[in-house]
Length: 599
Image (tube, rainbow, N blue to C red; front, side, top):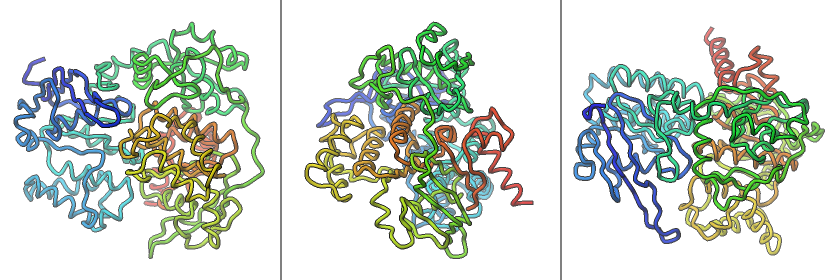
């Protein structure tokens, strides 16, 4: 490689943070990373791997501890402004001005970067069209949905074509259609403008679209290569198993993850995909699976398979009962059989209905956000609300939670009519917001105590529930830590613990896995599987379409209209795509609906 082709060179780069609670933390530990001009490079790794820290060092927003770092041929520590003049950076929390319109936000950022009028005239319409914001140029950014805000942030970042573009989790909260469009424009920019891009992502399919990938964990580089070369690391270790009759895929996955020799397992296109640690030899170590007469067959490896294997090899530890989103902290050794195996049968359909929605309508002035939607959710069911940004699913979700009144229609939750007794219904509800919404200056214990009191718990009952939640969500080691100082994974755990502290009948989860890595998602869904098995009803929204595989049933909405309702395999049959993944099915359903609306 010619040295002039390298746009970023990090040599033995380290960054150490000093904290009062944990002492020194190595966010980056002697990493060596090179970015090639004109390439699309991905950073992937679990929460706390050091991805954001590296981007902030590149952009001159943070000072290194030791090592060398040059960006665009400049020492970034001595020339931060010169570097910043040539790059654009979209952090996870992009700074939009909520009292300005979409057009005004873009104009403001164009002014800051000195973008000429003729460039704006050509670039703005293109960006607005791709981001699906053309019809919203006059809308205040504060009134946009979370996904639309994310797309506006990207549009503002791209008002000019920089020498280097840094994108930190740019597709968090963005639906599959918008993600596809986003990656289409990124590839176009790289190809046509020879733009150099560094992107961190929690989506392995996005990383697979890049020219080069770095895998990080706990501040160290575990591997770096092209996606094709990296995925070869898992060759011969990957299998799929078709769930026997009456066995839920999520329960089968949960038990596989608890068994010896299984590195990873995840539902996919109606089967469960899993990784073994010793190629085909490990299959003979799963007698309970063979006793079921399950059909097991080898499959080609993917980048995500190699990602999981490399992390497991780095840690070699797995927590008892579920995978830790911090990988192996106080982990316990596997036994030869699942430790807390769930019954391998689908729970019988409950006759009890926890939620009834009939001809539900929500209007904001002349705009209909939800149009005549009807469905029921049964006790212990995992029910998904899916749809693109602006589809009406969040509005539906908020009405179900009692956070938003309906315009018309019937809606009852836990046998309580929300039109007349919203507060009573809320006593039966647990809620986990998309964004961390607890008290950041409270400790973990103080948050649990406060919200337990809000839900009417007191005395011995409150103390018992706090202790149970601390143990259930592995928060004992963080009990006195301030919530704002927690990692993303631990914030999610605390949110779940608070949502469940009063033992609600129904748990509402608003994009709970947004922005977290595959390991944390596995851990999360194992918890959900156990809650469902215990009779808790789960309502979830998500932009990870593969998570529809965990649902007993789901709906897909678009433009306020319910497009389809059913179990994953039933939806596949309706769409005549018996082996398709949910991402492809989602895109097809939404695109077909929009074509019909345009006709």
